[in-house]
Image (cartoon, rainbow, N blue to C red):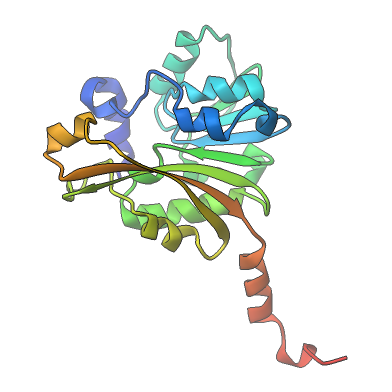
Length: 235
């Protein structure tokens, strides 16, 4: 999607930002409880003004959000009564939280620091397939072996077209992440009463939850691929 789509969405509000929840997603409360988040540095890409940011702020070592819209970032700080300051280019901080008004593709580990946990509820589903694969690689570059991601996707029929949200099946998730992650499909919930079902006349709508654990498999495969054959000898 072009950045202008999201910037205009936040300026208009209403139906185009209906992905914003007024509560903390129940998967967060179940799969990212207090004891798990202690000492963790959390990344929330395409965060908007997600209320889950406060959940992580209050429990983790630090939470980092990234969003293109300064409107969303300002609304988050204002609605949560947080005093913040600008500490760098597109970087805004309050106690326990850093929000970047930047494009996720432009950020590096040097910008974000160590990332132990990623929360993705509205990022992967917001991107068409070609950008989705680029996004997956970017997030993968920011994570380290052993770090985890709580991924929430939607699956529905029929196809809605070229605007988000996009339908992402469990098979799609395995295609994106299966080579370098342990993929645990922890939730598969039918949502027949979701507003999208009536609005778009959907045959069905499901919400999936995944816990992704990054392994060293990808790095090992790359090492073996480039390792000189002559260097592999029996003892």
